Amino acid sequence: MQASETVTHISQSQLAERWQLSESTIERWRAEGIGPIFLKLRGQVRYRLEDIRAFEEDSMRASTSKAVAA
Image 1 (cartoon, one colour):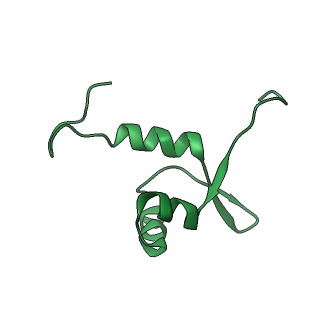
Image 2 (cartoon, rainbow, N blue to C red):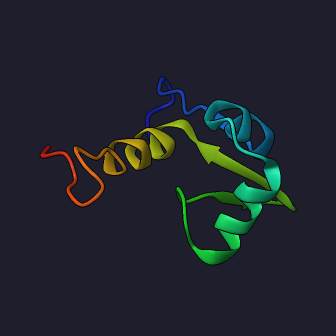
């Protein structure tokens, strides 16, 4: 990564607010391997905004059985 690049990280509580879910749901999803990948640095869980956006894109659906074509 170049020095001029900025990576934005958000916390579990910020992600829960973004998705209007409880923090316990985010925690459970993380434990079950559901949801975006995350960083755990010195006990602190953080999500890169780019990974959240990618997860949201991958989760887009045209119906309950079909993903939206990219």
